[in-house]
Image (cartoon, rainbow, N blue to C red):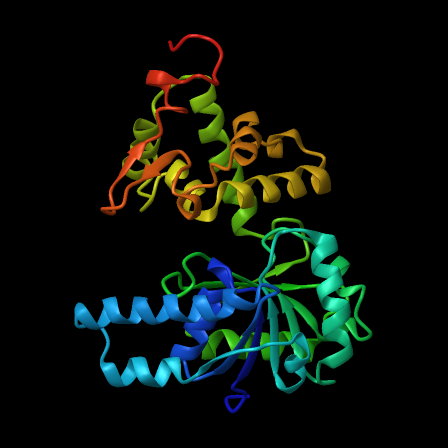
Length: 308
């Protein structure tokens, strides 16, 4: 399996390009496709800029940058997935959109290609249902930012074959990740644990129990987490958090997954976190961040009640 080196990634967003970067740095030849013709090209340019920063800090060399960028290619059509040994979808957390993508992929993919979704919550069995051979389908859930986070969740659908699962395990090793395996239960392992915590942090802020910074500091110092839950929600993307919570609530029927109302309002307002420059924090041009006064307890215009 170690000679398998061709990867096709669908989606040139933050997660998709993180997968592309990581694969290229581990010797894969990677093609990236996005419905926006400029997104993949711009994504590779941004990865190149990240390599430049690493060179400036002494982490990488010019030779490594050249080698890694030489492993990345822009696919102009999704049909180019036909040569790939692994095909990974990393687009919006929407089941119907993903299924439409996989219907197209199914017409071009090699018979023995592993087809995977980076979904963080949607049923792998449901996504596999549109394929002619669902045995070749599996969940490969990376964590953000992909080049930094060492974990890969491998999620077997009801019809995923043992061969496909073995290939997925080997793929994780080739990508330098530690893999854990989950059955096809909505949210899998990590998000079933993490998302309720993020949501409860949002609720605590809504109820004006404490401030944005104090909630994050409490989790960092009290639970020894490297990042507070509101910081983490901003990094994941408020829209992604809302999508995951919506899926979990729908699939489980458990109200502990009901999304905090502020999350929906933030998405409607375009306050999506780091990617939009504003979420629970405002992200400044100099790299610093400050609590968002639109949401914080001190000057909160969206919350009801009085702070205890």
